[in-house]
Structures are given as structure tokens and as C-alpha cells.
Image (cartoon, rainbow, N blue to C red):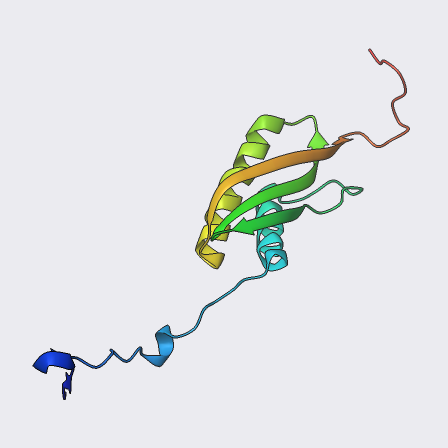
Length: 127
């Protein structure tokens, strides 16, 4: 390695060469992170009621952190709080593992509950 002479007889090292694999930047679009989050929610929920729409997510990425909102429909009756907690944990894990982003917030919005019985079979109160 040769040295470059600076002013007043001092020696400076040439700038380090950055290896090709470390050059540039990676930017992952918000919609890609949203797809990963939606798929993570699907993985947790498993089989959905027949009339239910699959979970989907919206994401805002700021400074490498993704704030996620997941919209989903659930069967009823179920432990809504536990299912939402499972979705939150899995979304944080999968987005972190696959996209490499921190997820400080996952808001789960339950859009609809689908009763276990088919519509029209039970009307009013039953005993």
C-alpha cells in the first residue's frame, strides 16, 4: 500500500475501497412490507370462515421502522384478544426476519366476526 503525501510532509493513507457487496443501499417498498405482514397474519389465523376476506395490512415505514396495521375477520365465538396478540407477535417476528425492519407497533383491526352457525339458521334467541 502506498501513502500519499499531504501538506507539510505528513503521510495520508488512501481512502479504503468499499467491497462491491457493501456498496449502495437497499430500499424495500411499503407495499412489500405490507404483503409480508398480511401473509404473517394469514399464517397465524389458519383456516378462515367461508365468507371471510383474507387478512391484509397497511404499513408506514420511517427510518427503518415499520408501523403496521392489520385488518382481519375472525370466526365467532373465539378469544379475540388472544388471537390478536398472536397476530401481533407473529407479524413482528416475520417482518423482522424477512425484511430486517424493527416493528415498534402492530395495530390489529377486527373488521367483522363470522358466527359459527350459518346465517339464517338461527333467528332471534334460541333456548
